[in-house]
Length: 77
Image (cartoon, rainbow, N blue to C red; front, side, top):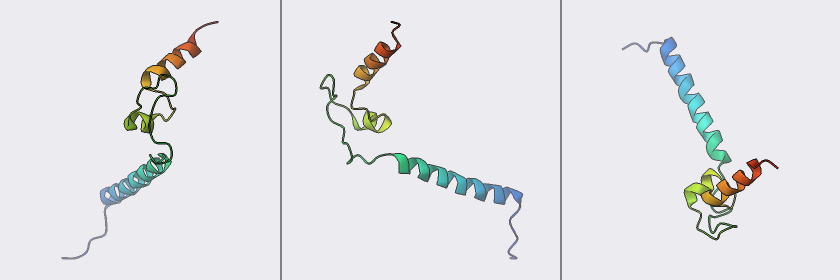
């Protein structure tokens, strides 16, 4: 078979694949490794903070305490 040059669809697919790989790599690079600040106990209530919670929002507070903190911030004075 003759080696045909890529058509527009193949070029677009190759570009999209490269763009997606670069984007995913950039996002993954921003995630702090768990060894930097491993999940542990909530700083407010002492409850356990799961790894998934810590990776999503590494604040040191559990979901309940973070929600309470945000509600207090929104309360009119």
